[in-house]
Image (cartoon, rainbow, N blue to C red):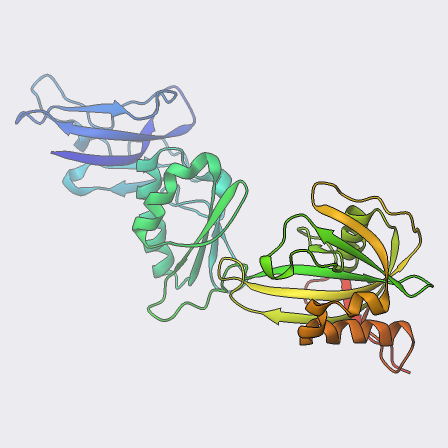
Length: 354
C-alpha cells in the first residue's frame, strides 16, 4: 500500500522548518516504515520512527514537547503528527498555496511560490480549494510558468480550465460556487489598422502584398497590419505605414472601424481605418512582405474592380476623402485623459465639440 505524506519534517539543531514530500511505503506487517525523498536537494528526517521493539514512536510527538516555531500542528489519522511552519504570506497555513485576494471575492495564486514537486502541488492545491470554499471565495486564478508545465495536468484534473496563454505562461481558472462562472472570458479580439495616406496631388499611398488572401491577390491596397501588444492605435498606424512603404506620417483621425466575429481561430476582429498625413514622399518597401508600393491617383485606386464590388471598403474610402476635403465629416482624434476607474492616463478617441 502506498500513501503520500506532504509537507514537513522538523530538523533538530535548526530553527527553520523545511517543506518535504515523502513517499511512505509499508513494507511488512511489523509497521516498519521508510521514507523516500522526492527532492534530492532537501534533507529530510522522518516523522515516524521505529524503536527497538518495532513500535512506532509517533505518539511521543505532541504539541507540548515540540519547540514552538510559530507553527501549526495537524493531527493525521493513526496519530501521526505533522508540524507546519507559518509562512509570511497572505496564506496563513503553510499547507496551502501562497495566494492573495482579488477585488471580486476571488484569489490569485502566486506562480513564483508554487512547489516544484507535482505531489506537493496536488496536495496543496486540493487543500487550498477546500479552504477557499470554506471561506466563501469565488474565482481562482492560477498562472503556471513554462518551467512549471508539469503542474498543468494536476490543475486540470482538479477542475481548472484554460483561460489564456502567452509566451512564458498559461493562465487557468477555477470557479468555486455551484453556479455559472462569472469570470471574464480570455482575450477574444485581434486588432488591425489600415492607413489612408493621400498627398497634395490627390495620390494615395498603396501597396501590393506578396502574401495575401486569394480574393485580394494582385490588387493595390492600403497599408494594413496588426497592433502590437500595448501599442496605441495611432502609433500602430504610423508604424505600419513606415514599415511597409518607408513613408513617415502624422496621424490625423480614426475614420471608421469594423467589428466582425469568428475570423482567426474563432476570435473576433476590430479593424480601424485611419487617415494620416505624409511628411516624406520617397518610397522604400519592406521586401519581406511587400511586392511593390507607389503613389496612385485616387480615381485609378478607387476604379479597381475589387473596390467597386466591396461596399464596405468603398464607404471607407469615401469617408476618408470627405474628411480630407473637409466635407462635413471628421473622424475621431486621440485625447489623453485620466480615468478614475484605474487611475491611468490613456487615450480617448472622439470628435471635438463645436
